[in-house]
Length: 78
Length: 420
Image (cartoon, rainbow over all chains, first blue to last red; front, side):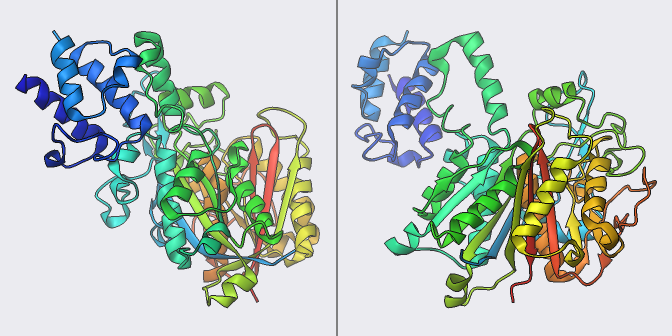
């Protein structure tokens, strides 16, 4: 669990160019971390890449915060 | 038509990041050419180029982080980063940072590129083939499109006037400045940020231009000798990367705000060869008519020209054809003109060349000095025109002309004069 959280946060920091302490589980990609709609598409791609999973578009639309991503990937990632 | 003047200059070239950094090296006769080390050239016939010197930003090196957020720069090809750097330099040089809605709406951007993001397209093609469409980034398209240089610059500086781009191969930079000056002259904008940018140094582009037999292949072990316009041993151009951007402004607008004025854009000519996709017409007719059109627009006769910045790419055919066209244009005035090719120092910056060379022409006017043609050891033909071999020449310069010719048979000439 914590390993997944760390990997998710690392990806968010790298892709959005934000300070690590801003990347809390409640942080919204678009409202708090400055992402636009294209950034969120790329983030989802980066999660897929890192965790070797496929995230369908309808599932991707529900991943709005760092916590959403951690929760989703904790369920699906092997 | 309103008078149009140049009030700001910016550039990133293989000689340096910044106008004065580049210009001082041009005048000293330095070359930006080097052996290609950023990708494998073992199976390429051309192994030399003029790359931008990257570094921490000191000593004229280019540090992309100073010009674009790393988070944004990661999404785009380098031609957009170069354009951002040159545009910010030009705007700061012009002292123009529009804040009111009116000033923002009166300021536009017209920055072109010959090819755009060829490296990013090549990489995405490999990803598509090897890993499928789901791995293509949402930034693939906006980071490669040519007009996104203008787009990014407008967003960064809040420029809400005309937002446009030119794509005319190696004439791009000249066409951009010429077309933008017309937008100002006609009143579509009071200020235009205009120029060209190019980042072609990739295996794919070297392979492609090599297949066209356009690149130098005989100086792989002596890179600084490879670009040698009009020299009998020239064997093709040396490809480089960079950007040049100027701030163009309505004369009255510049005067009213007390802006420093470098020069006035007095002439702009365009023509087509209608001859061949890559070779210039053998008679030089397209180049001749282009320069003639620029002089007609300027309302001056050929004997008023002092300095010409030639297209002069160092190809076996092109250099002599251009020289012939210039001689035909000048007639008896040929002996009073100095003409050089600064591509001997910078290499050929493709879509950025016309803009960078327009700036060199303006600086020749400012400093009363003609920059040199390097490596012109043995001219392949005799000419009464001073080709400024090897060393810069101090001389009176009142009117300058800059030529650019591109694949497809597309020609552009710009004429500048000191603003009275």
